[in-house]
Image (cartoon, rainbow, N blue to C red):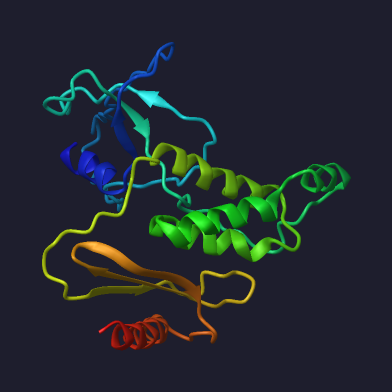
Length: 239
């Protein structure tokens, strides 16, 4: 039980919030299986401790805290499904264009390019946390589909929930600190990887970047090397 709870916390399955008026949270319970070995047979099996289906929901779900794991000082709060700027397990590609006339008419009325530009403005000014998500949805401005528009709306929902987040700079040490990472062939259309880098000074972010690599990496090591090389150039300039 403890392992399952810790895994859910690590994956940000939910966050504790005050229950809005008019909302009734759903309950939850632990379910166990008990099997009787009437024939004294040996059972051999393999399983993982925790597994996540990575399902996508457009609705907000409120749930009561699990019995026996209610956080101290948070007894009156309930759990809401955690939200990130970009959902886990979602893959966007150029193949997700409008499939029929109805979808084409719907997307013709959608201000996709304008919405993406608005997100870019927020990302460039004060919201480094949406850098990766905005970089993905901006790839499909020429012919977006309903799935692309859903991803854009999801970013706006995330911004609304985290509108009180801000960049804070302390008066401490002004030594720049950098963090670098990359994925591997995340772009299903070009099979290119994405590099990410963040540099902080005085505890606050001053440079952030999420950009698709110009070459196709043949291994995770090569993708990491390309990301590190570009970040090193940025670090030399910043220093």
